[in-house]
Image 1: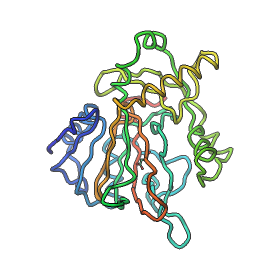
Image 2: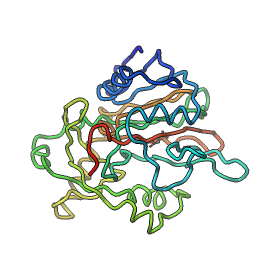
Image 3: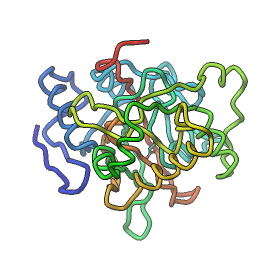
Image 4: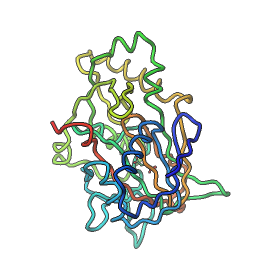
Length: 290
Ligand code: SIN
């Protein structure tokens, strides 16, 4: 494998690997190391079936089956279709996945390690690819916090709720997602995680808090918690921490959910087709199940 860093705040391109073939242990370990170091990896010129995407992703930990239980690949519930394409009057995937800043699975007791996305159809207008995926670097965001904030939040936890992002998409973005059922809500009660996490690959500290799911700093009164979260959200989204990945078809994009937050940019129209297959990998290789 050959790695070419983007020379930006995040990101590297990986060449010289066919992800459709079984992954050697040393290549897996190298990719994990690079995920820690660069946060976001892209691997162009891949040709994968949904099963091959699932098998490649499973090298990195336990695969998540999304709680909303929608848009899964037939027979492969770990592979989700993210798409705005409508066929025979029926959407073929979740049209608005991830369209605001968040970290996948921070609402889960077992948090996410990596997302593995395979881009199949990418909208292009006037020669420019649309539907980019944006990231912010949470190692850098932690380092950039004022000392007073680092001290005040050291050892604190925040609660994260799956329903926060889902309800926001329905309320604020006109999403056609159905309301979560009481059973779906009960399946994902809020969970708490440290606001500052020691990253299991790099050993550095990261700001593990995100606008999509973080609800409350535990043990703070509501007003102080709201103000603190608003500060953290503004801080972590500053331009200096940002990296924007522009898709080409047949590219696999992987990122480290502990060291980054991300946002799927919805700048394309309904008739500009975007089709991505996605696996979400839990951080089971780093943390024991509770
Ligand atoms: C996600 O949040 O996993 C979706 C990202 C994307 O579609 O660009």
